[in-house]
Length: 112
Image (cartoon, rainbow, N blue to C red; front, top):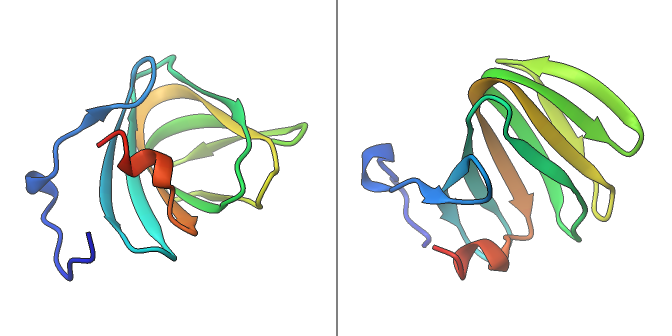
């Protein structure tokens, strides 16, 4: 899916889990960007994976947990989860988080 231009209206929201939906916006073997839409109260359960993850809160409000620390983040805030570090979110106000993974998440492509 190495495209130079990726119009948002050409990518459908796909169910992720619970009340969350995702758009895989672009990727190659080294990098992947994903938009994740959370409805209020939805949970991105604490998990870990071998990918580096940088996340940008585009809208809404989220309680973010990394290891044993929790912080409330709002639009404009970011967080980083190093490989194999437990992390998760609880959506306090409906919103969108933009996740970037390195290397790309093969498991997300197989669910498209």
